[in-house]
Length: 114
Image (tube, rainbow, N blue to C red; front, side, top):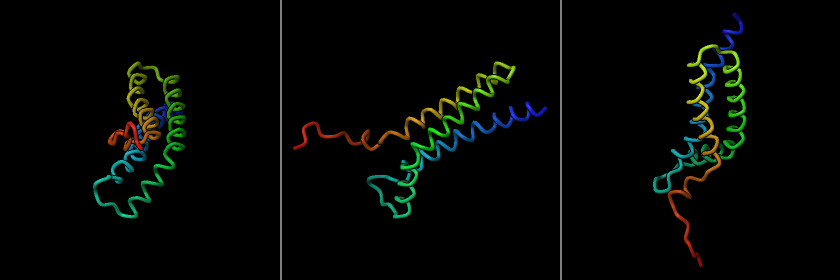
């Protein structure tokens, strides 16, 4: 019975990790807008999350991979294993996005700056 409870807890915690990574990476994108007024507090929060997100996303991705491995190994149903794809995909996308500078996508650099 304990194994089943652990399996359910792991299955519930995986989407929590995915949502947490979404929040960690989306808040700086939402708060820092180049052509809108910004408060000092919003800039501080964005800088804090942007500086910690590369480390946190790796830790969360490793934890999610461990949880997914536990669920995969202990689940008997194919749909329980198939359900791992979506949260793991979200987690790995936001782990990659935490290392990107989305402003470089919006503003192309000059080809020949002098």
